Length: 360
Ligand code: NCD
Image (cartoon, helix red, strand yellow):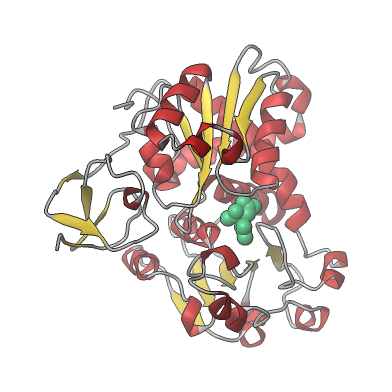
């Protein structure tokens, strides 16, 4: 097991002070990028993207290039030996031996953790199915720090696909760790946040409300986090069509919002924010995408410098249990050990945090 490296699988594996250090370094790099142009000279970053990406992949790549390092990788697994049937373990084992840091995105939840178990360098989760997206959250936190000056005492509205939106899950988990944040979870009943997120908010003592109307909530918000309906994660096209176009942020709605509202979106946008909103100075999503590059520069530096790895695995072997999630990495990579962990009274899958049931 590669416990000797500092991976980033879930931000909550690290204390809040560590996130603050990454964010502060991101802010410093943003102010003085020229000081870091040789910081990773001679280092190689690999990007393994099994799912489409523009911002995450390119911001990581430009981050490493701006630090003086080099990049290898694929963004279409079908042009690699994955198309010949190679498993995740073998691909990551080999590619990690060619590189100093490995960034992975995959449609199955828990893949980054599974990759980190055998990798020979630090692994970063760049999105694992509908589960988590910790580097987007670092991006969101740096944006809020720079643009609102704080990460606490905010009423945060999250709107759209709260069920499949991994950026939403990671952001809720993170903002729940700062004092006095309140959440308004705006979605249709079908796309409510997973139960483990509301449970986590309750356990963290955060006030939250589930709401179906963006119009009804907008005036109370300090932050509005809009998200795309995640078409690729629906069981059928009909299910997706029933959800698309429900929420749309328009200049009319913006008129009811606070003068210092911060509108964030991880992008890509489909049609949930009208283009006319882009001219509103409260629309921060393009700035946010740029902060993503600086915070990833900071993250690469921190992980490469780290001498104090956090434990990767928290659970225990339970061959008598199975995970309920058909999109869990273990459903595809059968050699992975059946690890399950206890969160409060619940036993959950180590890889994807979904519920455990007895093996049939
Ligand atoms: C998000 C993702 O991939 O989860 N995009 C991103 O990384 N900036 C959001 C999305 O695809 O909707």
